[in-house]
Amino acid sequence: MRYPFIAVEGLDGTGKTTLRKGMFRLWEGLYGVTPLCVLTTNFLAPDVATDIVSGKYQPSSENRDAYLAAIGTDKRAALERLVLPQQTARPVIADRWLLSELAFFAVRHDMKPTETYRRLSAAVTCAPDLTFVLDLHPSESLRRAHARPGDAVRPDWDVQNVQNRVRDVYDAVATQPDAYPLLGEVVRLDSARSRSALLLAAWDVMRERGLVPPSPTEENNHA
Image 1 (cartoon, rainbow, N blue to C red):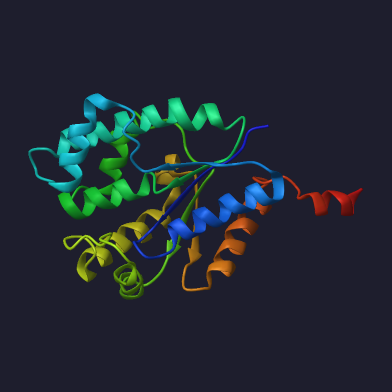
Image 2: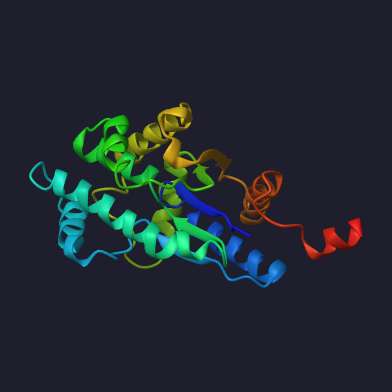
């Protein structure tokens, strides 16, 4: 059996982590299978770690290309060492993956998503089965993000004008999926609904596409 590779994308505060945790618990509870959860950056290529950190937190025209190359190297390592080997044993869920990179370079470097995609596609050769995009108006996502405890809010990123631009990239990419096959199938989910309703909607999408096996109850009903 080959288990699915699922990416969860969306603005900060839309519920990505909550959805990932919910799917994790459903896989464990229904099937006794523990998913592998990965992040958009996994630092599995130590030689490019410095380029990743500087490019993400101190973006500039000077480090842009090195950062983009480092992202590709890191994602290729994550696919080869984490995602692909594990799919025979368990699902893999990524908290952000490729779409976030397209948005970052569009906002920070005015790079067209098609160009960022073209350059990353040389390294990222495997698509998720699904990319969920949790959709929520930026004003509400920011309200949620700023309500979280700790220092997760980034003052230069979690602001209205930036998040509006990020959402615009999500919208543009989602409306032309054929141009970005390495995103897999892109499915937008209304994140304004309750956590349980969002989880059910995501699970139904996976069920409809045959990405989860029948539950024990369903198997008994068909026996």
